[in-house]
Length: 175
Ligand SMILES: C[S@@+](CC[C@H](N)C(=O)[O-])C[C@H]1O[C@@H](n2cnc3c(N)ncnc32)[C@H](O)[C@@H]1O
Image: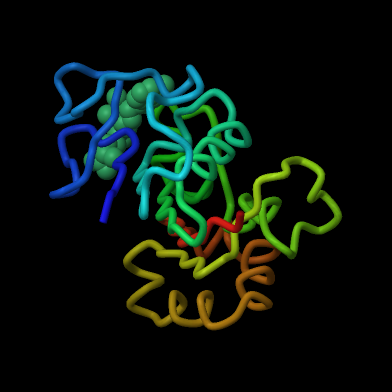
């Protein structure tokens, strides 16, 4: 199993190949994620994770296309980013993007008419939102994740009050 930990920082996943631009990180390969392609062959990874990284890159679409190129057919990407209503999303001045739980839908079947953004295709294995602790204890996290319909309702009407913490996507490369 070949695993790529993109923007691994100092918490590189055991057994993974880590890439990061910071020499003080645990990266095996120092590279700038904004300079494509990354130094690996097509379809060379079974899994890839990018934890608290996608909000830092210059172009989300191009980065997702690079993830797609690097994964083998059926390989899985695990992507984690702050929900845009979390304190951390706007607090960190190095964050360029502030995403919601539908922000990666453009690579899947339910792209809302905007599938032309990219030719890269991912099947959505799961999307999960974590909420601030208070709301989690009150049971809102279970409700938000119970169905896509309720998650959409939450994003439209409730999320500025019942605030999100992080979004976690598991996406399978279709190629
Ligand atoms: C918030 S840290 C997350 C680190 C790690 N994934 C974790 O969960 O602990 C973001 C990481 O992405 C790296 N990073 C951000 N922009 C980058 C870029 N353009 N090229 C390479 N690495 C980048 C940073 O150096 C940093 O290690």
